[in-house]
Each structure stands twice: as structure tokens, then as C-alpha cells.
Amino acid sequence: MSPVYVSQHPLVKHKLTLLRNVETEHKKFRELIRELAMLLGYEATADLKLRECSVQTPLATAPGYHLQEAVGLVPILRAGLGMVEGIHEMIPGAQVWHLGIYRDEKTLRPVSYYNKLPVEPTVQVCLVLDPMLATGGSAAAAVQVLKEWGVSRIKFVGLIAAPEGIETLSSAHPDLPIHLAAVDDHLNERGFIVPGLGDAGDRQFGTG
Ligand code: PRP
Image (cartoon, rainbow, N blue to C red; front, side):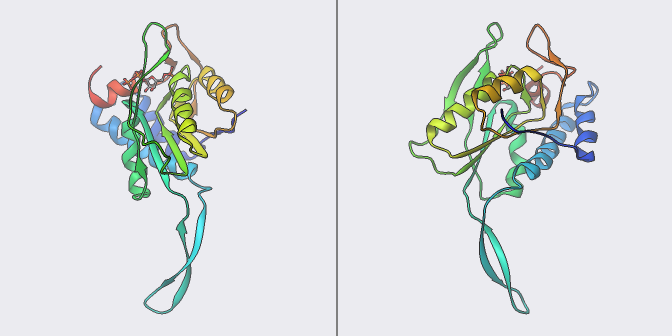
């Protein structure tokens, strides 16, 4: 089964509570998604590989490090978009590869509609970004695309998950680390995470 990391950071818990609140308006919601993505991204990148180097300070030469691996940020459209900016600020050299996947409202199955990945992989590590892991179908499909592209190290970074989504994703990809802010209680009959936070795409983009 996948290793599942649920952040215990007080800032994550505090900000997630604000995010869940039905009174939180779109602008604040987007800010919180960005901030939570930064915090979870920090935790999810703790094992990035480094190359030793040296750096000249104003006084002397000091030992230093550079990131060794090329990192890809892979938001699942639409809701994953809001998670890109914060992590991209911390890893400005990261590549951003969008995957368009929506969930069919009736079947709850993922439908892929956008993928412009080049033939050969250009990164070694990918962070798949999506605030919601509901049935897990969209995330599992995105990870499958990246595996077929040839990426060797993939992680999922989300905000909230239903137990059903974790089960599906980790069954499909047992080697995939899953980073979350919280695991919620269950999925309702419409496939919504309960208690959840509503529709993360609609709440970010004002379309709900
Ligand atoms: C939501 C969410 C995830 C997906 C999760 O996207 O942002 O991508 O559903 O559901 P799953 O785990 O059951 O696959 P949605 O289909 O609403 O598309 P949108 O982000 O474009 O609104």
C-alpha cells in the first residue's frame, strides 16, 4: 500500500479549517489553497536528491547543494491549478505540465481531455497536484499517464481525501506516496467528500 502522509503541522490544520468554512469567499479560498500547497509541498519535497557543490561567499568558499533532479508540477485541471503557484515559487526551476481530467457526474469515472506531454520525459520527479481525492479515479489516471510517460518518481499532493479515494489510488499505484492535509469521513452518494469543503474548482474560480 502507498505511504500516506497526513500533515500534522498546526498551520495546515488552521488553514484547512478556514478553507472548509462555507463562509470563506473565493479570493480567500484561493489564497488558502496556495498557502496549503506551499506547506504540503515543503513536506512532500523533503527527500529531493541533492548534488554537492561549493559556493563563494563574500568571505570564503562554503559547501553547498543544488537540486539534482528535474521536478515537474502536474496540476489536474481545474482544481489543481491553484496549488501550482505556491510550490512553483519555492521551486522556480520546476516544469509545469497540465493534465485535463474531469469526473463524469453520472459514472464518477475520470475523463481525460488535455495532455500536451512531449514524447520523452523531461523530469525525474513529479508532484501531481489536486486538492480533492474523492473516488481516486482522476488521481489514479493522472499517475498512470506519468508512469507511461516514463517518470520514475511520482508523488500525489492533495488537501483532503476520502478513505475510498486513498484505497483506490494506492491499490492502483502501491508505490505512490500520498501527501494530504486531512482524511475525511466518507463519500456521499454523489461522490462528494464529507465533511469536505464543497467543490474546490467552483470555489476557486467562482463558478459554483
Ligand atoms: C474534481 C477534483 C478532482 C476530482 C476528484 O474535479 O478537483 O480532480 O473531481 O474526484 P475523483 O477522485 O472522484 O476522481 P472535477 O471533475 O469537478 O473537475 P474540475 O476541477 O474541472 O471542476
